Length: 181
Ligand SMILES: CC(C)(COP(=O)(O)OP(=O)(O)OC[C@H]1O[C@@H](n2cnc3c(N)ncnc32)[C@H](O)[C@@H]1OP(=O)(O)O)[C@@H](O)C(=O)NCCC(=O)NCCS
Image: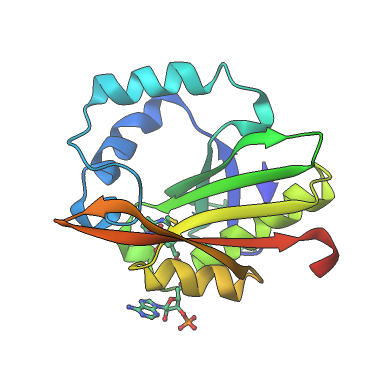
C-alpha cells in the first residue's frame, strides 16, 4: 500500500476488472484516455494478464478513497480509479504516467491532484526517478488543471497528434523534475 492523506494505492486484483470495464466504456471517461472502442471483459482480462508480467514498478495500482474517518472504527476504502508509471527508463531515471478516475462522482474533488502528488512522491523518493512526464489531450482542461496543481509544467505540444470526433487535436506534454519538489 502507498498511503496518502485521503487516498491510498493498492494492487489491482482480477476481481476489480468488471469495474474497470464499466469505467473504460463510459464515453466521458474515454474522452480523456486512449480508448476509443467498446472494451470487453475478455479484452480487459487479456490486458491484465499482460500487465502483471511487467516489472512490478510499472504495475497499475488502484486508487482508493477513505470512506470513514480514521478515528471512527474500522476503515472503509472505495476504489475510484487507477494509475501507473509506463515503461520506466532506469538509465535516464524518467517515467511517463497515466491516471484515470473512473467513478465520475469523485471528479473535481481534488482526488486526482492528490493521487498525482502521491505518485510523484513515490516516483521521486522511492523509485529515485528524476523526471516524471505525461501526455494530455488539449481538450481535457480538468486533467491539465489537476497536473498544474500538482506542479507539472507545460513543455511541449504534439500538433494534431490525436484524431477524435472528426477532427485533430493537439497532445500536450507536461513534466515535473525532482529538483522542483
Ligand atoms: C483527469 C482526472 C485525473 C482529474 O482528477 P480530478 O479529481 O477530477 O481533478 P481535481 O479535482 O484534482 O482537479 C480538477 C481541477 O480542474 C478544474 N476543472 C474541472 N473542469 C474544468 C474545466 N472544464 N475547465 C477548467 N478547469 C476545470 C477543477 O475546478 C479543478 O481545479 P480547482 O481545484 O482549481 O478548482 C480525472 O478527472 C479523470 O480521471 N478523468 C477521466 C480520465 C482522464 O481524463 N484521465 C487523464 C488522462 S491524461
